[in-house]
Image 1 (cartoon, rainbow, N blue to C red):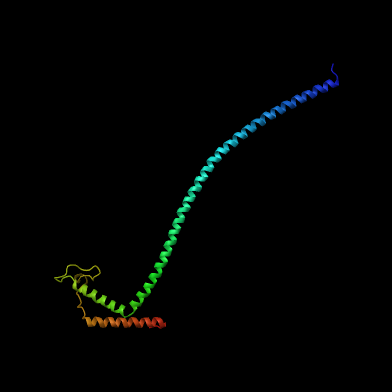
Image 2: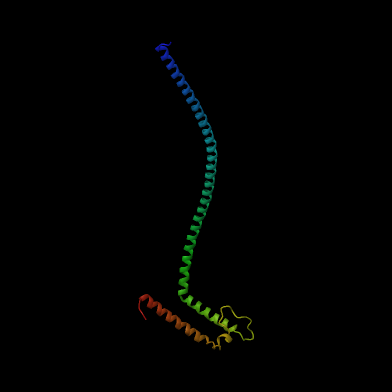
Length: 181
């Protein structure tokens, strides 16, 4: 029969063969894992190239938008500059206009405008044989508003305008002094 040394060698050979089979199995699984990892890395590389191309296209579009925004901003800066110059000029003209309108020339101009407007309305009054059309801003015809009052003479109009200017001047002086009527 066999002695203990042979039995121990047989048991050792069996465990060695089992260990080698287990090692071969592990190496086969490891080789499959490595090949699968290699395939995944190659797939990720191709996907990353596609993603990087898309990212680059998005960055290019963003740069185009920024360039367009920059040109719009430059245009707006020029517009703001022009508007500030225009505002300065209008302010200067408004001050000049206020000075002219508040002075004697403005008063005479308002009086002349009123007289011309009244004469134009009177001249183009309906019912007159030489009238062709009524101005858009004229008073309604006599038929619609009743009998026409006679127009006061020019000296009376001048006196009424002077009285109105005096009343307006008194009101302005009261408003400046903070007094009440």
